[in-house]
Length: 357
Ligand code: PHE
Image (cartoon, rainbow, N blue to C red; front, side, top):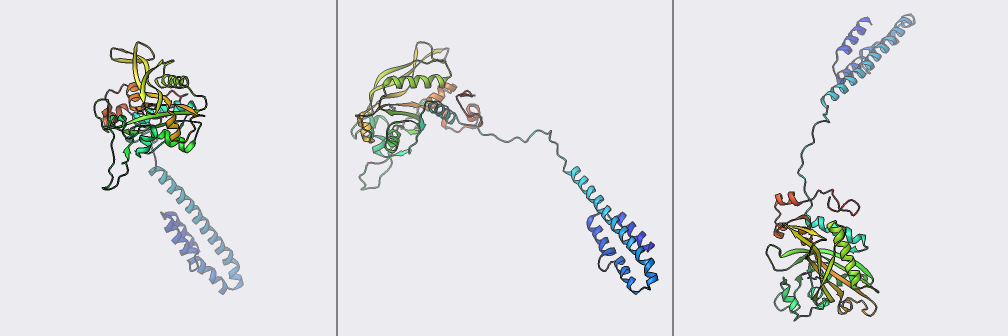
């Protein structure tokens, strides 16, 4: 028994891992283990022999068992220590550099403009970029022979031979969304519609695709005065100045009557544009009172309702606010340009947070 004891205690002491330890347990205390076999021998002994051998064997079994348990926890501790050492992490190292995208100025300005009009109770409406002849022209009081169709340098889609229906167009303005929204929602309503529009034109201030934002307010008691106030509020908030004077210049659009070109008061000093002061005027877009024919085309009773509409150029607003000189660069996808003029993705514009931070 002393031999067994010293043999196993030595073996347990020197074993280096848990599988080795388990092997030892089986070898000593398993069903056919050396100590278990000795226990079985007890049955063959005389009662006297058993009286001394029994307790001694049990004590041996207990001792080996305790040694196994102690070793097992020591091995566990050692393994944990080793893991902690190998999985050590330096949390003070600088983070890995990841390429970050930026928000395009058009997207940023669209968000800014939307935030301002949302604050005045306008909701956002949208319409398709490929538009029917009816929505883009006829419903807006631009009949087939009207010169406005030619003036807008319209892109037409192709109809198959023998198909006499008027071809669809790439919408030349966001005004068709006026009709679609009045049809869908009826009156009263207050909406803005930002989106892409298309005209065959290309120079420093024109691209074949550009962005407009349409505004429309329909109710029973709406006048040009409301239109002017809304535009002044918008301009002051957008350019982040206290006040901007808006001037109406008489104009003509088939879908508004009367119609007015929108100008903001500004000054140019050493090539620097300042809004809200000075003796110059900056063209910002078109506007007017919605033509009764347009209301009727969209199913709104023009003897009860009237309203104003306006259209502003988003790209132009972005160029003016952020000093971007060439419109064409907006759509070149040049990474250097995007990094320079782009915005941080988390800088979501809000009125209370400051629009352009
Ligand atoms: N749709 C006109 C344009 O693109 C702008 C406009 C909109 C004018 C609404 C009056 C009212 O030129």
